[in-house]
Image 1 (cartoon, one colour):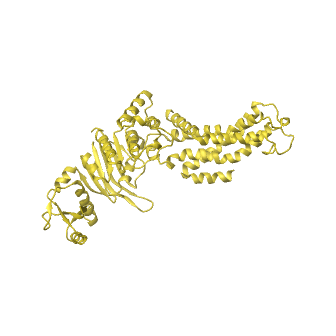
Image 2: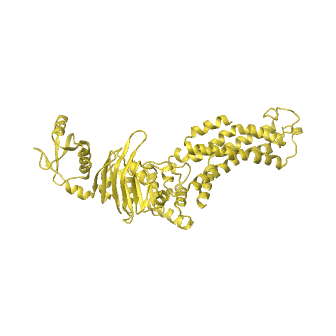
Image 3: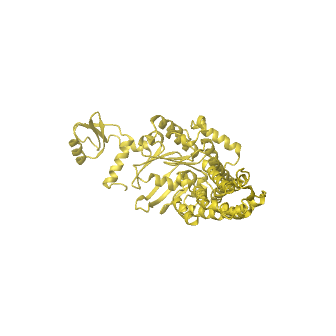
Length: 297
Length: 189
């Protein structure tokens, strides 16, 4: 299962350049797509999911031309949009049955089995007869992933699935995703770097429509080993002076002080201690490199 | 074919669970009932005193008057059935399924058509019930022939629903704005 994206570009009518000549290769496994809001993640997801066409570029899914053979893609696709509505007065069970028929499951026995299994897997069995419009945010997301899994799709796209979920729901959702198995491609698009760290053996960072980094999280972390330094300072002034002199990746408020994390080959000065690199450091570092014009190369 | 049937039956289920479908039916029922049961209501009742209240002429005229309001209802039913996925933001889930245009559009259209015909059939039932009203002027009410009800209904109204409904359906599908559909409805009525 290989998804090859080549030179994808998209500019919306209002002038926003959502995708700029993006090229990416995604294989069989969980793939994390990280980026800030407005990076172009959703535009990319929607293009792969056959909802919109790019201005230029190609996408190839195991020999299927995604842009020209939309129906063939839809047969093997499961898509969970970032936001979606529901029909009023329709129960989860009815809606899943309706979507299952659309997916091509015409045999009612097979359909019932699949729908029941998915309701169990997403913990919606007890509320299956309740109207979707009465569902809480977490339940709606669970329904969303249930409908995305109908028909055993080979390509699953989840767009910002854990944004807005409480920690328990988020955990449950991530567990569900990780249990999906390795014989299909799952693209997880998110701005929560932690989700990618937990689940994805491969990731990419995109921002402002451009690809900044692609690789395995462990490799990207290893590349930064010993190059992340941390210091706690107390005044805003110090923070600002540091920002001009050093390559500051991020600042956090920690117990009243500011913790500055700096990228440097050797210790940038007094008070700095070497810390383990985290995926957020990778993320922020690449964003700041883009802001300075050093990326994409 | 199976997919067409699924969209058709789903649309019917959706409409018949909705209160508005029954409200439209009752509205026409009430209007037609009073056209027959009351002398001072409706074009025929208050017109020439010699015309039979439930005869073919009266049926057609009363039904036409009732339908002036009906154009908006046709717009509402046909327009919303195709725009529901945009209004409710379900199109992202729906349009990533392998569905054919024929099944989706055809099924929705057929479901809207049957629903609208059902709603309009309130006219026939209303007139029929009106003939039994004990306070009505029974000198102007002739014997009930099924054909005087059914013939105008099918020859005029069902045909109108077909053409006007389809026009609204097409406009809704092409413009994707319900506002334009209603705008189109007002000069038509």
